[in-house]
Image (tube, rainbow, N blue to C red; front, side):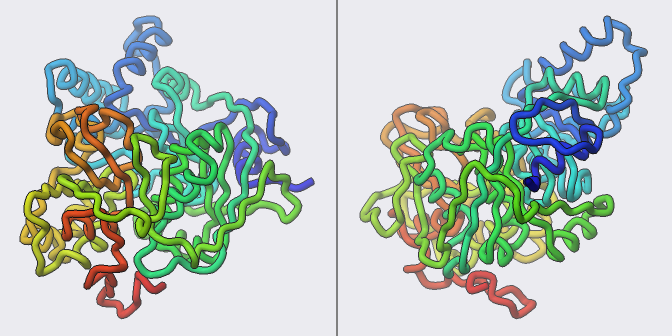
Length: 438
């Protein structure tokens, strides 16, 4: 019996012998990440493991990134002191530091060239599944786990079962990876892929740009997935090379690999999707939602704050104004994304349309920084990954989740709107290719 991608990656990192779902292995990690919302526990455990001796070597520190993105900028003294401790630790032990404003952990790790095809990457955030867009196994762990990795370079894993998802055909104009992930949530339910790997394949996946693939892998966290992994191709290799990554070691599943489930989706028939009612798996097609007035539109987060997401918004909003009474906030996923958007004139177009652009970071997504607090009864359309009650600081507001294109179209009209129904929803870059039509 053949092996899945996840089985091959974990087997290669656990000594090279074949492994199968259910096995428990101790595997060598290629890269680790700690963000500021989990750093305090990680630093405490690190001190405990080192017996209070600051001179104890941490051999994996050079392959660990400390990312200051959730409390960005710090909203209180405790968060500020955590940042001080993280900077001091990184300086003392040679860890990589991404400071306030550099960007969200799941964006800066690939941008910084810290991972490549075939890698095993862990991070203190459930959305570490994002790294699967690059044919790596990325998964979320606790800060105490990363402490063990920094000491030993290893961590134990139970080899997960895999669900193979084939996206047949191509996504229609105005439909994006975000809509695929929401459709998956509507089908399987939140936690429907608990501790399983989602192995995405098919023509619609191959046609996606890297930004969209990162969205597809990122949102697997809402399904409870241990990881989401895509095949590598020339587009993957070119992106990794452009960002200074190590030589890729692509991994493909065997033809006779064993899957716990196989799911086929005709991507060409999928309409834009939205989640509502404080549940990420309460999903309907946007055409089914009529007349729902909104007051806030949010584009950003680790799921949909990348350059293509901002381009989607500008394709709809350039030369226009958002609806009266709507507040629109855009948070780029990283400083690099912001600068690229500025060079393309996207920041100017959004600002002219009435949007406010925030510095890169996670704070707006979860209201940690207090930059976006909703009022009682306010309705939000957001490209974030979660719409839990109180997610934006007020349990009395209502959050809908959709693609960046759906958010922009809704901001334009003042109502939840299908992006296919508004003028300008097709972005054509200068290369002459049609991103929306693929």
